[in-house]
Image 1 (cartoon, rainbow over the protein chains, first blue to last red):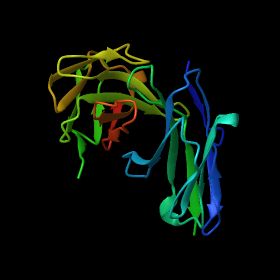
Image 2 (image 1 turned 180 degrees about the vertical axis):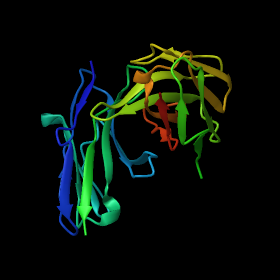
Image 3 (image 1 turned 30 degrees about the vertical axis):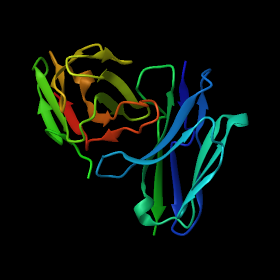
Length: 115
Length: 115
């Protein structure tokens, strides 16, 4: 069975602080994909990043960075120098190669950046 | 610019009514999905479709049905709406081929209230 855990329900930071959103996943499949989505107040989920299980290289995109560690089954997301526009709900999701086409989502982390 | 649209942003219905939620994508995607989003539960898959007239149950199909008569359109049907179906409904689509690899694109969501 697949499972994604986002233990942080809500996080508040002051603008310009760094913040890390945690994601821990469970799967027995050796081939899988991990995703992060952002859901701003408008409601539409926006794709941020995809990682496959064979690529443990960390990635940086502007103020965003992702740390994928298979040893701890984690795929954490860090926002550097947070801004008010980063306020949203962030979802981590898992997709396995052998299963159906759907994503298994975590319960989300609501990030509030205070000006 | 990829686009997934949903027929309504907000909908209010009465218990026992038949409810249709429509989703249209303009990306020529084979795969389409319906999720519901509830606080503390993240997104849960209701149904998905990988081709016209094809459908597969997701994790919580009870009380719902779907229709896919055309490639671009995927409808979610609540045969007899109940108050526990009050939720945010999100439609998504993705391209085929290396299906497991491709991210899903989401619509803006329909917030359904059943009175």
